[in-house]
Amino acid sequence: MKKLILFRHAKSRWDLGVNDRERDLEDVGIERTAKSAKKLKSILDFEIDAWYASPAVRAKRTAGLVASHFEKQPKIQSIENLYTFSFFELLKEVKKFDDAINSAIIFGHNEAFTEFVNRMGNEYLYNLPTSGVAIIEFVANNWKDIERGQTLTIIKPKKL
Image 1: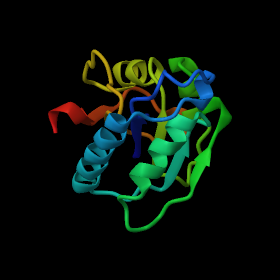
Image 2: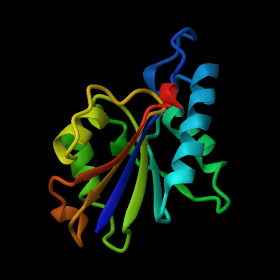
Image 3: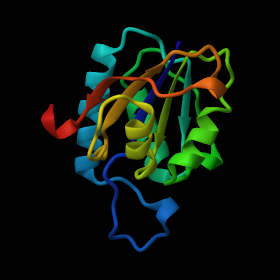
Image 4: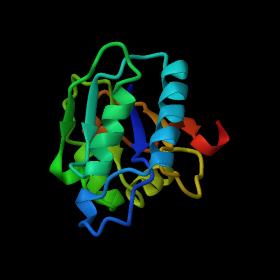
């Protein structure tokens, strides 16, 4: 069994005139991320083996905020190809994960995340909101073999 947590980056700022990769977080995004992180921590019944983030500032900052809610501080690895808005590119990266890892969390972007949940989970989601979380479990021993799995949880911070 493999478990994947998709944690969409927090609401980001558009007012600073920086390129897309450099956009920082809005205060409301930081607050919502804290709510989602607390909820995630409270429902997890497994350890997260690997933490990955897009190299975009908003994704890396979100990952750091979430990690601060966990006792054991994880090493967050930034992966260039996680800066994607494509389901197919995201799936390609997930299928490359080391098979010794049974559970992973990714901090990244829409449209890739919403489409991933809809294509790889068993629950339709109109949109994974900023600071939203989806957990999908796959019946597979190897990441390269994952197929449609079971959506275990969807967290929407505005509903917390």
